[in-house]
Length: 392
Ligand SMILES: C[S@@+](CC[C@H](N)C(=O)[O-])C[C@H]1O[C@@H](n2cnc3c(N)ncnc32)[C@H](O)[C@@H]1O
Image 1 (cartoon, helix red, strand yellow):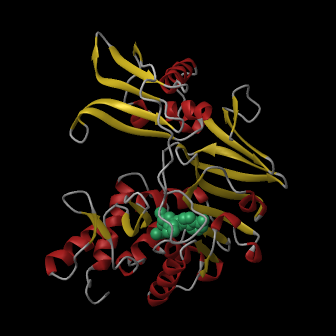
Image 2 (image 1 turned 90 degrees about the horizontal axis):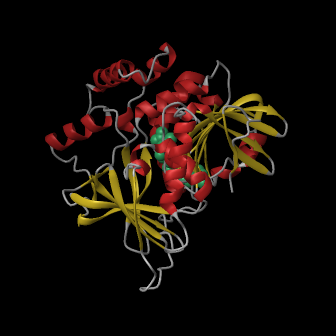
Image 3 (image 1 turned 180 degrees about the horizontal axis):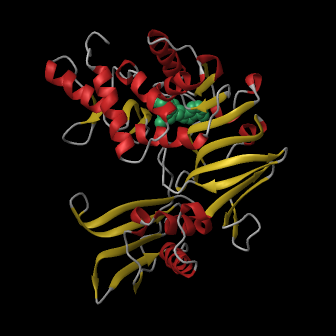
């Protein structure tokens, strides 16, 4: 494959330059790693959406196809490497090589030093493991993926480019107790709460960097330091980041969320709001604040008009069947709201929006997380602040 891409060093150099120019990579050590790792060797087969939005294997049998594949692989893009279809017939992405800018941003935030031992949760294609091997040496790199097939592929492909980290197939939520303690743990899969084994397996003063998404939905990257035997604490990263959800078993497509529909005659209440209906998509800190109180899964979508190209409303649905529609177009700065069911979803968004303004519009970095064996809580500004929310 390297023979098929003799110009890969130039492409890797260009990717490195792009990440530096975009402010996503600064340290010479990680720049050297990005230049040195032939990403294309790790993602020879990838999936792209066709013109009807269905995932299809990228055709690399022609020269044009191969060029398009190399362009994708050496761009700042996530490359999908595994999909699966769930019982409802929906195809979900099970693994990808994450966006290089997200990886380099996280690796720099991990603040590794020579000789550090690092555990990665979510091996995927192995690109991140390769960057870590380049920086720390293969003897210091450990990585776990729930999919044995991906681990085998990553092991072979990494060996081909000269890296032999310790790769293990299993549920990364358990960490890797036999190899602990680690100086750093980096999770490239989202967790609803930080699994305690990750804290237990990190040295005192060590760092755990993970995407915490309460109920798979509300949160972002958080950087914890193990401050005591029974505690890890730290702030969210200023820049939003997101990964696919952790699953405990291999070969399982992400299931649909079960919803109990409301009876047809459930009363519909009409009112109006000044809060932007796009808030759950665009103002993620406000949505996070709403989620801290809502906590059950809320489905997000559009409705009315042509929901794909020109929808009329944003539609939110709760597991108990409650729903809210908020019109995108405003009349005299007010958006029409229709809602039904016991969960008042939009009222929580309005309350969160108000609090966010009252607190001077905090960014992610003003929020933090404290993890103890029995409890996790989110806080604003400091762990002892009055503004604290348990993660249920
Ligand atoms: C975004 S991909 C990881 C990308 C990877 N770090 C790379 O450099 O290509 C997320 C990975 O997490 C894995 N995963 C999901 N649940 C897991 C679990 N319980 N333990 C370990 N890995 C898991 C998925 O199989 C998937 O490969």
